[in-house]
Each structure stands twice: as structure tokens, then as C-alpha cells.
Image (cartoon, rainbow, N blue to C red; front, side):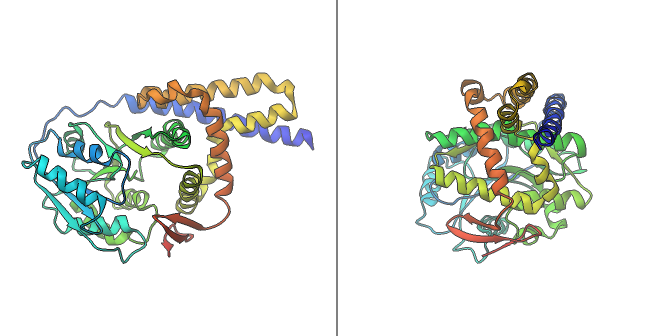
Length: 375
């Protein structure tokens, strides 16, 4: 029995080494694409749904008011006029009177996916063809709009989705999750891009042409999905337009979370991923090799050279993404947390196979087999 277990572990770890090599190749491939140099002045509508009191919300929003772009409008959606986001947005609208900005009060969402509802309400007021959708926990530099609009210049491209560098808050668990996002999550995105191209989107920040959105049925086509960003990219790709990964890296300010809040967030992510792309979820066993290498060492200490080689490849792939692609200082400073993050991520991945309920924005939801969800 021991020999069988060791053979299985060796096979899985060999697959992980291959995956780590693919990550390094995919990172290099991504970095070979230069950012656009063409300056365009096509007007842009920026849509920002606001919910709750994100850590650093005012600075996040201020970065969008400070865009270095000739013509853009900024639409900000809140559920109620007295919400914290409405207070911050109103203050910034007074601070930047020359920025065309509008606060859209949506009321409570009649749908489980409140973000899609907020976006659909803002779309009714958006004036321009290029639509940039960005979450409230995103912080950007002044050139963001110019880069995304330039990348949409090619008429064969319907959607541009941004990679992101996670910035933690003060809690230990937020540091752990940020390291996971910067060394594990984007790695999978880059490998998927290398092997099959982009047929999905990342929801933190993306740019889409209104015609591409209308071509898939608008936001109405996304209202029942938990992973609406993934489905938006999938539907745009299925319509015949290209989805590309932007050369522009945004900052995802994930804030501080307690252990329980972080675990709920991870489980929601795991279960929604399992429903959205089940075979891809199974394949995630190759993405965190250190727990399997540790198990092999516990069973057979003499396998330490192989385990050490696996750790070396995991290190190389982590720095290829976090260091070279994201220019992330956190991973370099706290790389000692990577083994613990891999253990936590592996445990969450296993837990993601069980149960179909998730907690999102204070609501208990059921994720259905097709990726849709119901309350």
C-alpha cells in the first residue's frame, strides 16, 4: 500500500513540476507583449458598483477621478443614498468638479447578484461605447483608462480583462491570501492563456465594448451567475470576439479579514469555480505541490531530493509571476508564508468538493451545477 501511495504522490508531483514549468513559460510569453503605444481619445464610461465600506475606499475611488484621459465619465452605484460609498463618492465629486461623475442610487437588488444589478442600472446612464467596469476595492494609476481603451482599438477584440496584484490589509489572513493570489491564482490564468487563449474574464477590472455586451444579451445574460466575470468573458469569446489579458496590472486592495471571513471567502471562490469549470477545478491539484511533497517526506524521508526539487520549481514559478509579472514586493518580503498558504489553499480546495452553499454579502446562496445560483 505504501508503494502505491508513493507512486501516486510521485505522479502528482511530477505533474506539478510540469505545471510550474508551464507557469514560467506562460509568464515569459505574457511579458513579451508590449503595452499599446497608440494614444486614442475615444470616450469611455467607467462603471463602479459600491457596496459596504472597503478598506481604503476613498483612495481607491480617488484614483479613478484622477485618470489622465481626454474624455471619460464616472458612474458610481450605491443601494441607498445614505450608504458609506455614497458619502465618499459625493465628497470626491466636490473635490473633482471637472470630472463628469454621477451617483446612481439603485435601491435593493431584486436579484441574488447585486453587482450585476448595479452594473445594469449604471448602463442605462452610460453614454459611451467603451465600458470599463471596476470593483470598489481596486486602485489604479492615471494611465489605466488610456491603456485599456487602446487595447480595445482592434475591432476583433470585444473584451480586455486586467491581471491584478493583491495588496493585503493589516491582518495575517489577508497577507496569506494576497500571497496566494499573487503566486497561485494568476499562475492559472497565465497557463490557461498560453494553452487555450482567453475565454474568460477577471471581474476586478475589465473593459468591454457595448456592442460586444449587447451581442451576448447584455447584463441580463449574467444575472443568475455567481462568477459573472468568468461567464462574461466566456460568452464574449463564444460570440466570436477575442478576449485578451491586458498589459496593465491593477491593484486589488483586499483589506483585512478575520480567519472566519477569509475561510468563507475562499470557500465561495472554490465552490463557484468548481461549478463554473469542474475539470479545471480538479486540475488544481497540481497548483499547490508543497503539501503533497510534505506528505511524501513523512511517508518516505529518503525522497527528500525529489521533494526539494519540487520546492525549487514552486519557488521559481512563484517568482516568475509575483516578481516578474506583478512586481509584487509582498511575496519577496514574506515568501516564508508560501508553504502555509499552499497548505491552506489545498485544504480549501478539498473542502470545495463538498457542499453547494456559499455566503456572499450576508446572504446564503446555493450554487447550481451550471454555475448559476439561487437564494
